[in-house]
Image 1 (cartoon, helix red, strand yellow):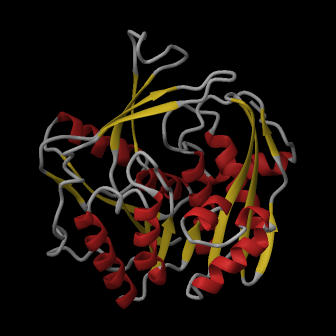
Image 2 (image 1 turned 60 degrees about the vertical axis):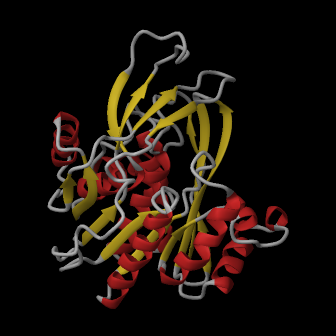
Length: 331
């Protein structure tokens, strides 16, 4: 199995079940963040996963470390310091009401980093893959600059770079994201990006009218260094009933999974991270492309069955679900 480093912010998530945030008197606590979620999935799949971040040196920072260690993620590069852990509040979607997120992450320990505090550590020793997302450069101009420097160092060490665009309109504008991506994407090997990213962030004209495989081809034409592009198609029948299909563009060929029906979603947050981790696992394990997209879609669908941000299913459990050859969850 491979050695993977992911880097990003991890936060405390406080979520409702079915009440409105303005009316609830009870919140469920979890820890999560896109890159941490990917690290946890990859550890569950048998890889050596490391997570780099910064958290406050208090009980909440310790809870983050214990959360990661519980799932087998190495925390050698988890820094302690700064003033606070970022928080986000999640109002769960129900029926025709969509979920809603409120961020309380300003001045968090991670977002306030302005220099490479890992400089005396060898972040990339033995690392095969470095995974990042567009959430990190959205936090500050300093983080955009630092992220690019870290990517340059990784490339100089022969490390593959995985990047999830993961656009968050509550963190920055489309124009800001598009400009940052021009600097980031020349270093990327594996990219998580969909049709809307192609249209609004990469400037691909009429992307909404193109078949998805042609969108992927246009992305690769803009950035020939990108070897793999992937995303999911989601049909939302209600907040608790979705249909999910995975897509993959690999070695100039397009692949898609069957559609998985998810009739009783417990928690959809982190489903995209579970899909990314499934794709990365398949690539690191040198699986066949169709097997990669099938596995990733199954992993993502299973994530919808548990509370919290991270996927709690092992490699064997995802493989067992695939063998059932069923489009519905076997609970």
